[in-house]
Length: 161
Ligand code: SF4
Ligand code: SF4
Image: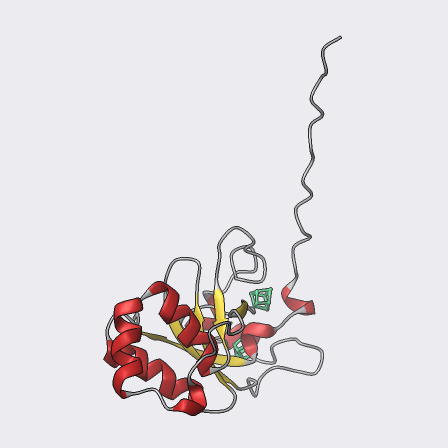
């Protein structure tokens, strides 16, 4: 008797609605250079030396620096108080393609210098070697087995919703 393979049904996660999220109204994100040179890599270190700043690598390979900052127009009910007059950049956000609902692309959030340095050591070893030679204080040198970058939060290059 031959076996009939069973179809495995993969359930898509439910779409997160903006009214239950509002994450892209709680930071400012600005595009930055890819760290393919020591100069750009130390720029990222500088960002990460600051509190409440993190760096994001999206699924398309775009880098951005993010500053935690809640928009003054976001109400406690997570609704925009100026929705009809919101800026262009807010209109560009779409919850069908934002990072919260995009489960198909790998992305990283770097919250600490060591998390970024681990990524750099593994993905840009020549750049890491240059940084390690002149720009890496012991306080921030990653351990041989340092923690991996954290899974991405909800954000996108370039700004808020
Ligand atoms: S666009 Fe995405 S990140 Fe922004 S509020 Fe909507 S679901 Fe959240
Ligand atoms: S102005 Fe933009 S960032 Fe601010 S609450 Fe409205 S949609 Fe969000």
